[in-house]
Length: 268
Image 1 (cartoon, helix red, strand yellow):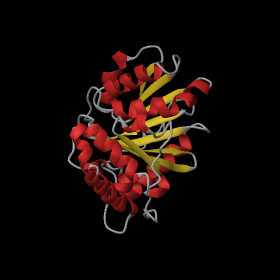
Image 2 (tube, one colour; image 1 turned 180 degrees about the vertical axis):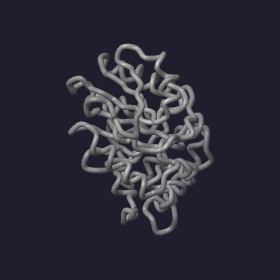
Image 3 (cartoon, rainbow, N blue to C red; image 1 turned 90 degrees about the vertical axis):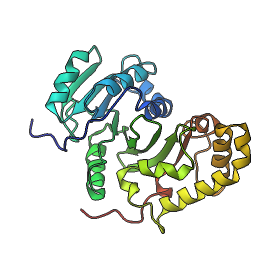
């Protein structure tokens, strides 16, 4: 194998840091896992500890008991440190965006991997990851805070990005636009006037302010009221598995990628 594609990340990780995206992936793509033949999931760039890959393995095995999960890291020291935690169905290999896992994975998770890349480089990484998944496979790429209380991710298939999800611990922010700091690399620099994502976060803050009376009953009712109001003017997912009150209660909101996407992809 040639040199892995990518750069070594900071490696910051920790227990339950990615629980929000894991929970969403299991709910949204659980049927895909159940219906697949020998489903393989790749966790790209798991960091200095095996823990988030191991947690993903446990959570997805509740959905599909024979799912295989492979943790991929470009740093050989991190791979060596994770090897003792392998077990049937869970393994760790050295690699990068080329996904050296033997067969095309059904799901690729890549969290906090592209933060150090430029916007154009992030798009290129998306292209490479999309080309490596199974025909009906998906990539879940995003970022989160150090303890996972704020997160955002994009789901992509072989055709391109499909959805954007924001997720927050509801007691952990002042206004929805606080989540802007966790936008994926392809959007974070677009949070300026004239861009769709900026307009969305502005309107979300406005809906949040109008929902202030619901705060008397707690942060969760206020969030849900704000999301419901926002759904009147933005194409917020309102039905399962992507949306509806059950997902909103968890501090989530999902929209089509096209509703927030920049008009043009940056050149390399």
